[in-house]
View 1 (cartoon, rainbow, N blue to C red):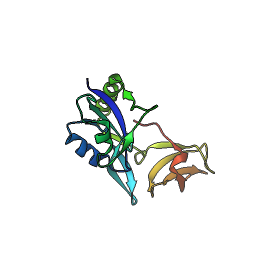
View 2 (cartoon, rainbow, N blue to C red):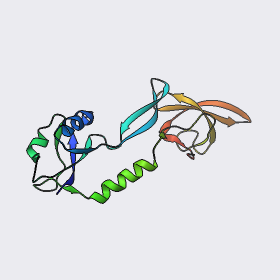
View 3 (cartoon, rainbow, N blue to C red):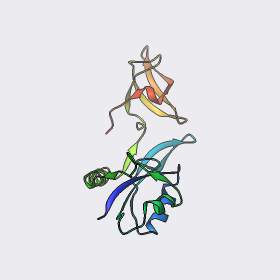
View 4 (cartoon, rainbow, N blue to C red):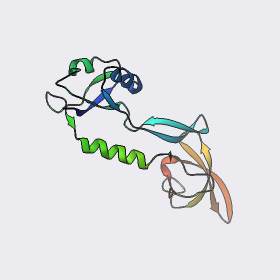
Length: 166
């Protein structure tokens, strides 16, 4: 009977491992998500794994391929295990992950949109409401903060910004 297992892969090798595992007739589930990120100062859509370095696989251990064959597959490091044998992942968990993935189809934005009202949660402007202006690299943003009835541009770390996502 087919069961789901979780594999740990070499960093960035999930696509390679998935390709080689599928060539061995192993069912692979490798959830990915589209994320809007700032790359080299520009907003860009990037597809990233939901669980970096992990691939869910489904196969029948009695009929093959063997655990050793799968562990020897290019890009695979080892099974996730508790004790001597690889742990079986419940079918209900995989079904729930697929359901959630289908519901959240689309873009997850890592930053507010230009013109969004944000609140500064840390640093010297903590507690201030501001207007999001633009990204300043990957870790900072430029905000418009009202000081003495005038809007002033300030640079704030992204970890110090809170906003209501639409």
